[in-house]
Image (cartoon, rainbow, N blue to C red; front, side, top):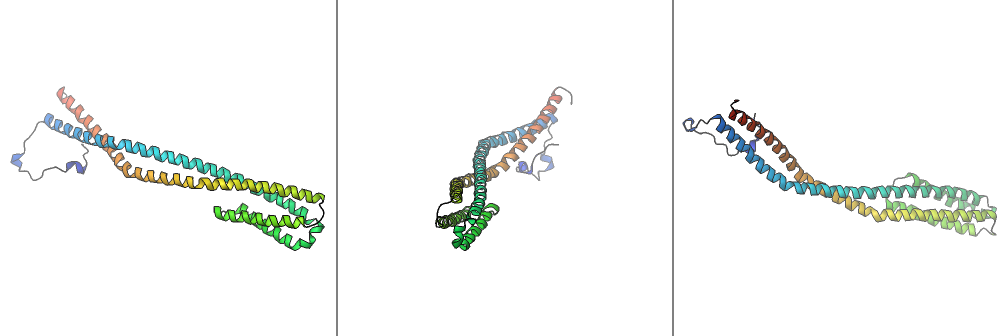
Length: 247
């Protein structure tokens, strides 16, 4: 059975008087069918060929944008992991530093303020470690921790003569600052590439939408070309058998 879609019958003539119909032979009829399939193939192949470069270009462009976006996102994920490790290490050092500060009897005159500061820093540390938040909110928390830590250092420096534990506290404080600065660098790097990732994603989506616009027609043409090609081969083989006397 010949598979000819409805739109391929737009010029079909109906209502022709039976006396005007000319009976044609089987060979002539098959030749007419073969010519019809060839015409469809020529038309569809031409359109398919004109769409092919556009489809290939859009697929390539969307693939490139997706690769760029994914590479940036992978880099951002690494930076976030490194930053979280630094936050965690800084938190652990703060715990040790606070323990040393609290055993320093000279700090008793600031005991209440110191404990409040420590409690607030610990709460912010916990939030930084366990809460999903935006870049701006995280920045605010980090800045708050820096401010509170600076006040803790001021109180510590007011406690009197330098002791061995004070030296250890200073070392812890310096290490914590170094870690927070490292986390800061990670944060800045994340911010600097975040817009790039969004730009690549936007371009990727744009190319995919454009591809959808032509891909449907491209696939339909591919299907029709295959269908008419199969039909053409069938009728050409049948004509060949007739020509060879096989019927």
